[in-house]
Image 1 (tube, rainbow, N blue to C red):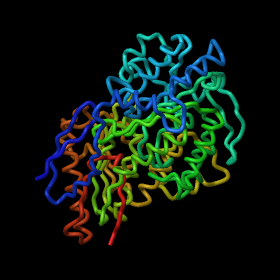
Image 2 (image 1 turned 90 degrees about the horizontal axis):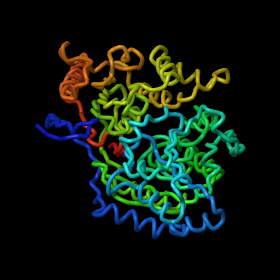
Image 3 (image 1 turned 60 degrees about the horizontal axis):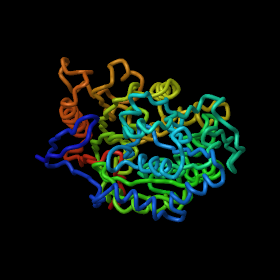
Length: 462
């Protein structure tokens, strides 16, 4: 038997796997020895831009009452914002030291089209010194016209609506995490602005069915990626003075800090990411077991783990996903739920025809459902097992797939108990092997993806 451990919501889960299961994991890069020192060095010696202190001085020289906006990610990303490896407080400290008073520093939460964060969620993810310093922490709202300003159109036709506070700021700083992204190639950089600070209407082209379907819109790809290009164009329209991005290892420890120019610093982080997240595999698998990682706080985000597994999953194979859906809403918005349930009712082929029809009315967040449809174009719904200990029983009827609770004793079902994850994985694997045996597959190839959505499979079949 093989033993491994994965981060899962508030816990670390110890799991046992059969010896015949391939444990696939990305390489382990060296974490930074002294993250706090690395952050300060990055702010002093940025890539392609003047040092942050110099930019602060220049902004105040131009305008005595200048306002600084610092954009942060929401709680769906494990960006280090607390403690010695936190990237937010060092920025605020320098702003205040350089002459920005607390009432002229705004921390904008780049929620995109996600729900605003509660005070409890903000305090859970940010350094307490941010709040005690007196700076304002403000959620972006993509659906409030009063908080948005029109900037014009991109070359692809997006009507750009942007956060007014950000546009009014005299110094604009982005923070974020650079990790693989299933549409944009990599997160971080320009994505703090687009989709972080855009209006819902701006997503109509940016996340359209055709943009999602473009072969360039994929993991770890920036070249010829229309989603990346659109996001970058919007960020340039809005204006960015400085970014601070990090890369992380599988234990969420910083492996690099990249500060400076919007494009140059982000590209350096992307190159660092590519050094260790790709997982070469020489075969495809009949069964893949995986987990949704930190990002899978709800069903909406959990698709990223399935897409990471898809390149190595055989046609009509079996996929099991366990997810720590600990968000206040374990599925997602009402619009997401509506299109997701439509996928369950009519299947991926008919959904695809609908969303590409000229008569279809674009529904914000349909892009994530389009991503789910890609899973069910590879395998039937009955071959996909989904399990989250925090998901109420009634919610399993909303989305496609098999409720993993069927592999638990009745007394253990639909309870927030992470100790049940092992039994669900074992039961799902046993059921998959039985179905495959019925098709004449006596010794199915099985893999467990240790890194969940973060390791990107690179098939080299044959």
